[in-house]
Amino acid sequence: MGEFENAFMAAFWGEEVSPLPDWVEWQHISEGLTHCEVCLKLDKCWFTDETKPLLPQHPHCHCVVEVISPDKVRNEARSECDIRKFNAYIFNPEYDDGKMELFESWGYDILDSEMLQKEYEHQALEKYIKGEYTLGKLDKEGQRISISIELSNKNKDIIVTAISGWMVYPEGKIRLNTPLAGGKKK
Image (spheres, rainbow, N blue to C red):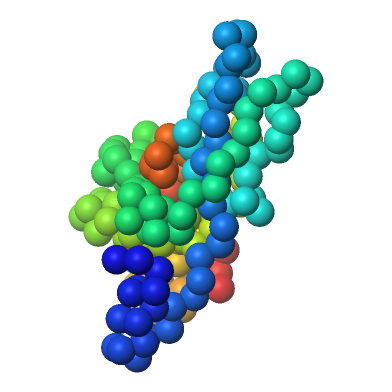
């Protein structure tokens, strides 16, 4: 469905559709030359035009960005979260970094791993598509972004916000690096 059709269907059902930001695809242009590892990791990655890595990345950088349609982003972007980020990391008592204690204080335990995995994937994709992310560290491993995830605190009548860390991959894919880069009450 195109942007017009999406807006029409949302209006028909009484939903509000906020316009998506302008999106670009990073393109590494080698011109037969070797290129830096950072630029190679950015090749074919999608970013909002407003929140993309610095261009040029370095002197003699040949990279460019090409506009891509919001429909392409809406229809093809995807998020991935390995369930082990929860059942083998967050809820693993061998990692004494306070994250398990924090999730437990919100009312979650290892039995919630699959639900948390799906909720993180859903919210992160929705927010990524809307451009609601912040750029993080960029190096030869790739571009990291932060996305806030809102969870109901099962022990209290409040919403908590977990700042999650993701890596950007080509063609609109993001993958969870860490479920909790920070947390705060909302």
